[in-house]
Length: 121
Image (tube, rainbow, N blue to C red; front, top):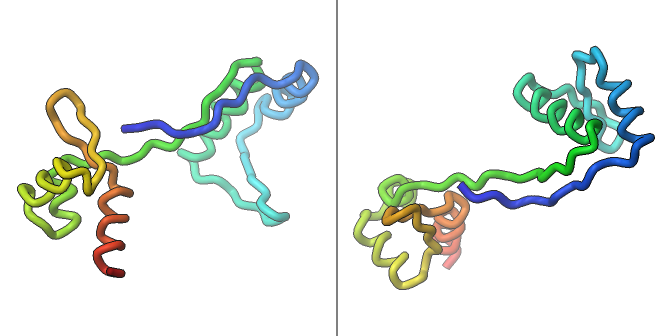
């Protein structure tokens, strides 16, 4: 997995105190986007509350997305090509590859981008 995202430094003391008061005992997290309320599912709610609690404590926080990494077999199956053909493409640099030890890993987004380029070209 690779992590990409911004780092948020701690909040000012007054903001931390206000956020801590708001979070105390709260069981509901609703996000407003352009004035429209969106209630978060339990997993997302827990992640957002954890983030807000860390900021309320004055901790620096990094928010990141996790890019899904596939084995070459998984990527080849997704692309509908042979494992050997995919390995050869990574060797030529046509599809980016990351190594975990001696094992190749390919980002799902990279294989989907390659597929889209094949369909449009």
